[in-house]
Amino acid sequence: MVECNQEERKKSCACTYSCSRRGKCCECIAYHLKYNQLSGCVFAKISLEAEKTYNRDFEYFAELVLKSK
Image (cartoon, rainbow, N blue to C red):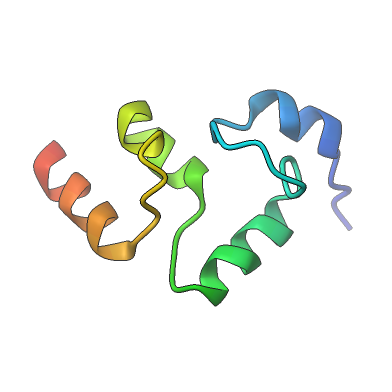
């Protein structure tokens, strides 16, 4: 079993929003999927400016991916 080191994950988390799920990737992903969204870390890998909009929609992410090609 792989151990989740939340303190280490907090250091490398690219999400700019501060919340109780920071460093708890499984909780974060589950939370956003419940609202048909992606977590901020996914957006940060495409564009930090895009992540800062807090728009977590799948459609917005798809637009960013298509623009980056």
